[in-house]
Length: 76
Image 1: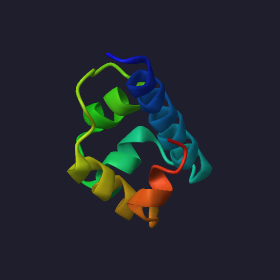
Image 2 (image 1 turned 135 degrees about the horizontal axis):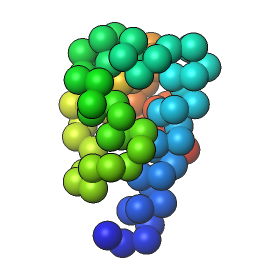
Image 3 (image 1 turned 30 degrees about the vertical axis):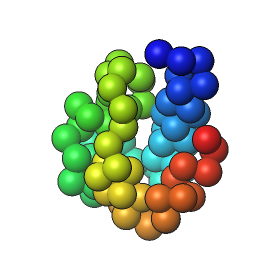
Image 4 (image 1 turned 90 degrees about the horizontal axis):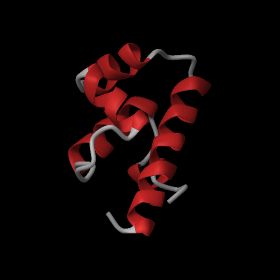
């Protein structure tokens, strides 16, 4: 994986964790709100999965946080 892609994934994982913790949500609560399996949240936050992050997931997460997808990706 290219260095800049790996860095972007790390930044996304950090942003996702920060937003979730700011809301004082567990990973399970975020998963329920975003209608995404909790294992997927865990993988996104810990970078276990090496494949690309799907646009559908970004949109669902942004809706759960009540922000735009652009705001979710602002750290990249």
